[in-house]
Amino acid sequence: MGDAPLLLLLHHPRRSTERRLRKMSQEFPPAAFAFCVQARVLCVGMAVVYRVAITVSTTASWAVATPSRSQPQNQSQNQRATSHDWVVAMSQSKLRAFYSHARAILEQPAVLERRSHQHLMRASDGSNTSGSAGDDDADSSGDTWQPFEHFLLSIADVLDQYEHLQSAFAVQACVEAMYEGRVALEAFLVDCWRALEAVIPSLAVEPHLPAAAALGREVVCVYVLLRDLLAFPESILEANCVYASAILGLEDVEELLPPVAAHVCSICLERLTCAAMRELDPEAATGGSCRNDGDNGECDDDVACARSGDRSQFSVRLPCAHLFHENCVMAWLRHNPSCPECRASVVGER
Image 1 (cartoon, rainbow, N blue to C red):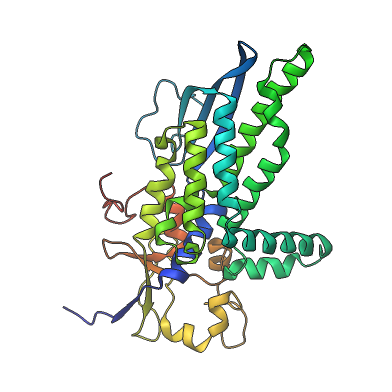
Image 2: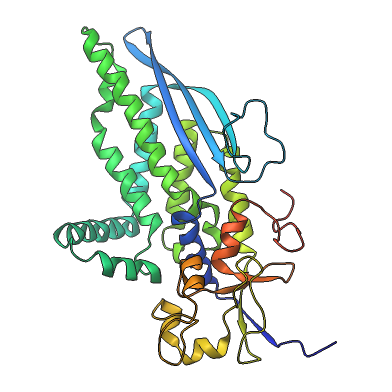
């Protein structure tokens, strides 16, 4: 059988899931959206109802064997563009119901506390513009990465900004006022989508994110309200859900023996992180030094550092037991939901 190195599989749900989800949201987004809305005024007696046509174009990064006829010739074959079109009716009663339920959620004590904290953070960030380096360090550790708090704060800002929108559902004697009401409704729906789009990757793994326990229920409730308001098909989120499922299948791996890692990442062909080196250099886990540092404290392999883009590479295992650098395999899974070595599917059948 040979002298196979002994492996210790460490799975830290809080640390690893939040770290990978943060990378998914900020560095490896699986899909990009283009949201377009056009409203038309329909007068029903003295009330106004809007016929809203919505188009969402999704560009997913999953590999496509053969481009479709609707795909432009100059578009990369590793991207798949799909378009979803639908029509919704927007009445004053529907908007009032959305506002009422959303306000009730945003006025919960836990949400109000987080909103107050976020307002203080905003004020602090505005008064301290010279601390970008420190912010990057804090973000890299995951301490200040709070997508759910930012989502709820964004929705609260949208509701406050468009409080006057109720008047857009009354027949006005001035045509210009009717036009302004239609434009305001379109802008309101666009802003709602933008707030939702920013939190979509986090929603995909919300049940598996321990840090979301405090606000997870409120965020999901607001998401359901937005889904019902916009009436969008949940298939739009397919790329995010598939990619999130692949990320949840990764396991942290630490090498115990031998002291020098015997495995290499088959994507970048650089050695994987060994546990002994991590224990001897605890700062490496936070990006303080490079895994390839020599005795003189200087990097012995600048090419590997530049290629990885991260001086604290984590080693992970796919369900098929193949080992890779976390960043390398996350970049790969963004385009191919299969193992780079054996091509085994990383996610189950949906």
